[in-house]
Length: 589
Image: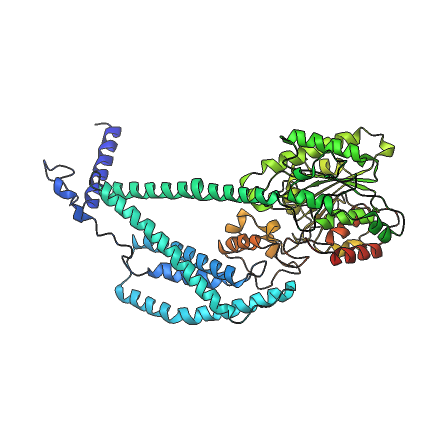
């Protein structure tokens, strides 16, 4: 018998032994005894399947308590009581799943004495209530301190009770769903056990249930949720905000003279075109005669394809006389097509209306959802629009060209960066670029912050040997900057979860928790594997519901950005202060 034959025979013996153990039979098979005798697979071999077979496991319960307490620790932004309750319940459920899994694996190798288990349960039951109360009190204090730090209203004292109630309900619901899935697995395994060995039946049952759950989640829940969100957003896109009416000025898209019909602009496009400051307001601020600003916008319904919409935008710019202005700004909108009014108004007031701005819609969905389901739309739209405007601009005599600037906020900054290969190509492709709240996926921003000068914090990187790019957490500090203006300027709040979230949060602490920390990041925030990742995901959902200068809200700080990037002749820091006061006093849309 050669080596290969001996190895195959040994492998067969091992598999037979494992199968017989799974059937509850002796390892050794008597001569002539079949491998799977009829009596070896009675239905009674499977225990009765019940929804609740036993009390929660010790390991699962212990880890759930730890995770629950850690869920109350602070993150980048304060959490409302309802969100905190849901977060705590979900986090505790994740802890229970992790602990139960570890406990099951450990039980394969070591079974603790019953006396030790009873002592451990007693200790856990005694410690859990005071520990939970302690962290609820600490968590409330951390949330109050963070709210003060961000200038938000304080929590109510009774919010603690509501947090506990919501977290318990959330945990119970998730545990119920998990046990229903386990019950389905065992039922299926019991059925399959009539035809195959018990270990194979359980493995097959688990695979089938996992496959059905994943398929249901992806193909039904996620797909339908995206479809419903898209449908709802498209309906919203067809509406018009109160007080928004079609402009009369021929310098604005949607006007009677425009090539782009008012109804095709979409909700955000109509607001963009209709809210341009008047020549009177611009002249009053500048102290001199002003021009009617040019705003060009093309919606998803304005033309059938991206290429047609881009060509329509350039024709509309030519019709309005955009390339005769002092500044032409190409703005990559956010997911819904929204353009921050502070961005447009700030530049128009700075140049007394001698500006032209162009933007396009590429989606109905919010930026975070567009980033998840389809990044290609913003990339294609931004790349084609920037290239077309740049080609038209480059064809003009160099002496008479306007300044060409780029702007992108949130997902818009991603689209702007994807239009270029590197920082150098972006700097060479325009007279300046202002990028606000860049998400973690930005291909140019990420290497820049990773390659910052040693000792400079990630939320405010410093480059001593390259004045092409500059970063700012406090825009007002840009007024005292010395040297030539940068070509690329990033505004990024140290508490913006859209900027600082990333997959690596799962397994390693982030640089933005190193010291020194950002001015609005809690000193009590610490990194915990998995938990900090999850907390920051939750922060993203309400990153726009905080005061200006925190989270994903940049407000009038863009005025300092424009002033640092391309100030008009004679512009001063006092002018920037006046402009920011004007923008802050305007109603926020």
